[in-house]
Image (tube, rainbow, N blue to C red):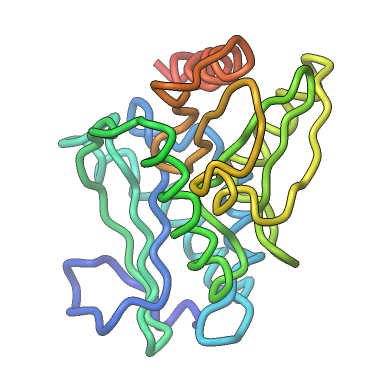
Length: 218
């Protein structure tokens, strides 16, 4: 996946995607760029670690081309696609809020993302549950945190909250096998999304912190 295989999406037709990253933009910028790039390096494609060359290309593309490439969708979603041949491309599309923010829908999204993490090493979306002043989450066995998840983990520590991993959290939440006070999704694309039927102060504070980060780019 060297730099010679990476280009703009319009330059060629990609094959079957092996990895798709969807990162939220704000004012034609990528607010947590460094976190996303660190998480990119933790990912695997076809069983091989993402190379530093690909990560360097992604960073260069963001620095040189994103400002003009995001004119149509300044607050949209930056998509990085790597196909099974190791070729990479970037493009920008519109952002749309989640249509269903129920606990069941968020837990299902997190469970699907965890299945993706078994192949790529990073779940782009994770479900977080609060028990008192402790936040529980499950990035997957041996998996690294996504860019958004690393941000929320740091925000939690800043606010004096505990953070602990709980294996099988998303699946157990779907099955109603866990007791908790509130729930929220942490997503590279959607940010922090409190469950419509399980909201609480911690999720709201995380969402406010994330939104302030987006607003600072304007």
